[in-house]
Each structure stands twice: as structure tokens, then as C-alpha cells.
Length: 314
Ligand code: PMP
Image 1: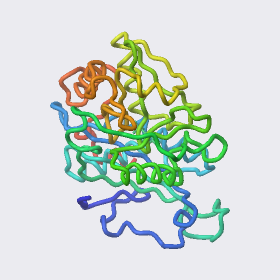
Image 2 (image 1 turned 60 degrees about the vertical axis):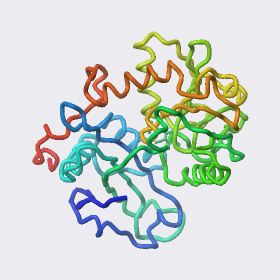
Image 3 (image 1 turned 30 degrees about the vertical axis):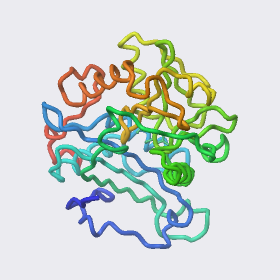
């Protein structure tokens, strides 16, 4: 990670290297953070943040599930992300807002501890490798299940959930795969350690429903919108593991992974073993909007430069 100069912290801009916390902050022992990951794209019309409001809304939702009140409005959080991006001078970057229970009382019951909010951004490349978007990746089914309903809430993008993601990702890596796919408590396909998943069979798109312990992915939602526009039938339905093996196409979606084809699952070749035509069609529309060559018909982009810094402080 290449540091930038500043990080937004509770309404102020502080030096990147001063963004530190006490080791006894509640979050360190108990995982009590919620966070987001967004991207700023360098479009031909200038730099723009992808689905800023939806990400910040999910941050507030994630916090609400954990009874954490973020002391900023949706508008203030959006402005803060724009401010830190603008100050960074980066035309394309990754943005990480994070809110957590800070230093105060020690013990699992941390409701009196202050809620700290930081937003950082930095330059970032392709998550699953530069060739992944065109060639696809080799993945496995994880021996770890996804977090079960009524244990850790999957609809909250909480730091603690990523212990499960880490187990999935590390196991995949040890066994020579780019990523692992977790099954849910019932044994149906849930999602990757940091991506939602789609299956294509006979021209129809399938993706697990929110009840399959998935994060409500913003890229997932974007693909659902594109598919509707392209008149591709989509169903949110439970997916048995073996459907991945006999699918025509499988792909991941996520802020980091964008739309990444999957060319094999458990060393079983998916379709032709390379990016399929529907995946490519969806990518074309998605990246067309993100680079500005196609109209932003769903209002996904918030320009960074147009914003005045004064507004962010309001
Ligand atoms: N699932 C998990 C577990 C994730 O961490 C992510 C990345 N935020 C996703 C799915 C994809 O979500 P999004 O498209 O909003 O990045």
C-alpha cells in the first residue's frame, strides 16, 4: 500500500502516519468495526466515485445492526469521502471508510466507548491479478462454511465477519487457488471471501439470495441492473454446489474484483474454461459506464472535482 498524505478522521484531515489507535481500543479485542470499500474511477469526464451513497448507506446500516450510531449523516460521510479523494490528488483510487468502537471501557460491552470514524484512500490495482478480468481465475469450494444466520449478521459489513473470510482465502491460497467459495449453513453456494457470485446457465443468470449469508454487494446490485437493461433473465435463488461445475459461465462481483470470470471450480473446467460471452457483455456495459464511454444511465458516478471543499465542512 502506498500511503497518501492525509486521512479523514472525525471531521478533520490528519496525517496518514498519525492515524493510530490505542491497543486497548474495543475494536482490537472484540472486532467491533464496520467498514466500506469504494473505488474512484478515472473516467474520460474526470475522476468519479462509484455508487458513493449506496456504500455510505451500507456503512450506516452495518453500524445500526451493531447498535453503533455513526455521528455523521449520510451527506456528511459522502462529502468526507469526496474531500479525502480530492485532497489525495489521485484520479483513481480505493477508499476505505471505517467506524469502530474506540478506547474507553474494557470488556465486551462497549456501548460507552466512542465511535471513531476514519476515511482513507490510496492507489490500488486489480484485486485478483491483472489478467483475471479477461482470463478468469481458478477457485475452490472452501471447507469453511460462510457465517451462519443468527451467529454473525451477514448483511453487516463488519470487521469480525472477515475472520471467516480470512480462513476461506488462506485455505484457497495454500491449495493454489485464487479464491475460495463458501457454502452457507444448508450447504448451498453463498459467496467468495470478498465477492458475490453469479452463475450463467442456458442464458439465464442466477445468484444466491440475501438469505444465503451473502453481503448485499453493490456490484451485485449493479450487475442485476445491467442484466435487466440487457433483458437477461436473472433469478435470486439457492444454488447447489454442483451447478457451478455444470454452469456455462461463473463470475465474481465486488468492488475489488469488479466482474471477474471464474474458469474452474475445484479443478473442474467451467464452460469453455475462459470468460464467457455473457460475462463479457456485462463487463462491457459495467466498464463502459466506469470509464465514461457509456452514459451513466443509473446515476452511479459522483464526480470528485466538481465538488467544492467548503461544502464538505458543512
Ligand atoms: N461479499 C463480501 C464478503 C465482501 O467483502 C464483498 C466486498 N465488499 C462483496 C461480497 C462484494 O460487495 P461489493 O460489490 O459491495 O464490493
